[in-house]
Amino acid sequence: MTNHEVWDKTIELNGVAIQSVVCMEECSELIKAISKRLRGELDIENNLAEEMADVTICLYQLARMYDVDDTDVHAWIDRKTERQRKRNALQDHQSGETTR
Ligand SMILES: [Mg+2]
Image (tube, rainbow, N blue to C red; front, side, top):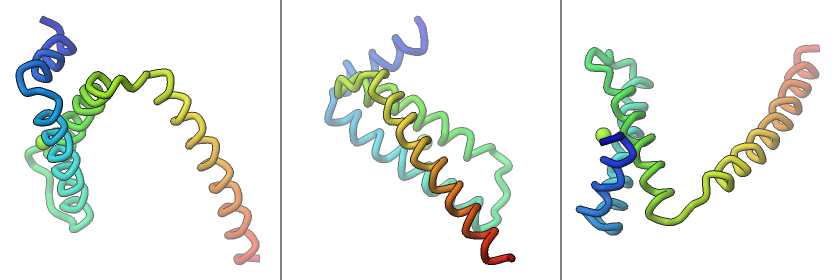
């Protein structure tokens, strides 16, 4: 059984509503792991990587459960990245102005 088959089976067994709640919980666990790192806590058990893996699995399951097309996600990624590139360039330009 592939990873994807296991993740699909989990949706089938839990149902969309429960699995959606699990995804929300996993997002909150990732938020907590990031927060701990920001507070300078040691991550001996590799918790950040674990929670990143959980959310990565959830992103796949959310796409399956809500028929989100991978092409659409990638189009959004491209749009958002382009917008961020422009913001970075503007910020870079502005910080150059203040140091002059
Ligand atoms: Mg988790």
